[in-house]
Length: 396
Image: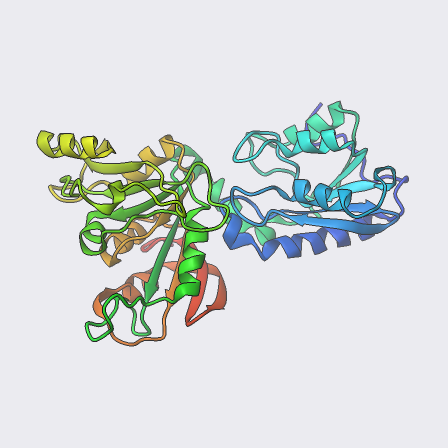
């Protein structure tokens, strides 16, 4: 049987007809879309439990690496006070996943919950998994109501469709979020007249950044930032992960000092993943040995000239190491280069309330990049813009 067909268009056992079910699905989808910048490259998915024609519980996939919508909705229903026997159906905007990722397969969680009926608003667009979640549910004796097309992924999660593009599947690379803070005039470094140690962004923005760090597989910067700021690139937020993100430094000639703060033992309130230094092929043996003794792992990647690494090769190698979501925290030079190479999928820009600053801006690079959907927030003394990059410079 075709895994995506042969399913009942609707169920007479439900209190609601198909248009009413579709209305619920669209409502759940809209709620899930509010989290699209937090879950990417995953799709934004909503779910709800139906009882006597009403939704008694809702759930969304709120952030990448977190519980999926189906699991959240089932947990909310379990604490709703409505007996499990009165649960008529689980509504989910996208076919439940059937594979292991950051979490277990949602199809298994649904089966374990004892749900007898599932309403699906869209089939999985990934050709590798399409129909498999539904097949698992049907094999377990669960009635599946296929309302494919009720939720349109081109509107609900266009970023997910780009993630599944043929080019991306052929040459996979991490979903890369470029984050930076800038002054009102666009500089990434505070003016020399600012107080020593003053940040462009305030404490509220810094707290957000640490949450973001905890929701990626890797944090990447360049040697220039290591030399200028000597960062730790650790995660300092409540609920920090047991497997903190890999800390990655692009350093073609291994100039990172072995005494850099990256190699210090994280404190009790922070978590630091392994340190990976990406360098050109055939680095200086003495520098390599010193950094390895300090605790670094070296990754040799081809270079495009004597000083610059091949950034596309870097991205592909990082993906091969299991890094799916990457946070880029670097200076204007590396950030601009990644944008220009089409290796940035999403930007997160904090603009502080100070003027002036040192060094170049990223204004011209952003003008050459086509940004798609965006979200604007106020965070302390900063404005924050999240946006998806839909086309790199020079694309048409």
